[in-house]
Image (cartoon, rainbow, N blue to C red; front, side):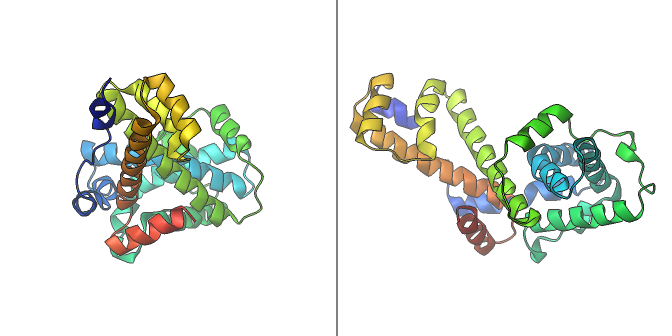
Length: 248
C-alpha cells in the first residue's frame, strides 16, 4: 500500500466558500417547501439528525420517558403539519436557535392545551425505540448546566457525529474502511510518534507516512464539520462564529 493510496481519500473535496454557498440552509429550505416528496424527505432527514437534542431537552424539563418520546414525535409532526419551517428566516439567525425557540413554544402550548393536539397525530415522523432513546439519555454524564446549554452541547455532538459518518462513508466508498478504522482515533487527538508507530504497524507504513495521513484526515474532518454547520446558518460570519463556539 503506497503513501499515495493512503492519502487519496483525504484530499480536499472543494473550496469551503463554494461549499458554504451550496449548503447554507439548503436542507431547511427543502423541508419548508410545499408537501412534495422532496420536502418530506428533507424534513425526515432533519428529524433523524436532530431528534436526540430535542428528546433530551424534553426529558430535562421533567417529562417521563414515554411522554418525552410522544412530545418529540408531536413536535416534529407539528412542524410538518403547520409548515412552521416556512417561517424560519436565515436572516434572523441560526437554525439551531429557531428550532429551540419553536420547541419551547410548542412545550408551553402543549402544557396549556394538553388536549388540543392529539398525541402523535397518527403519524410517526421519526423512528426510534423508546428504550434505546432513554438508554442513550441515561448514559449521558450528570450535568448541572441549563437545558439550553445542554441542548447546544448535544447539537454539537450531532454535528460532529454527522461529519464523522460522512468521512467514514468517503473511506468506505473508496474501499479504505480499514484505514479509517485505524486513523479514526486521531480525529479527537492528533497523537505522537508512539501512536503513529502503532498505526503504521497496522497499515504497514512508516510513522512519517501516518503523520501525513493524520494531518489530512483531520483537515478533511474539519471541512466536513464546517459543511454540516453551513447547512444551518445563513452567512459566512455565522459559520465562523458557530465553528468557534462549537469547540469552546
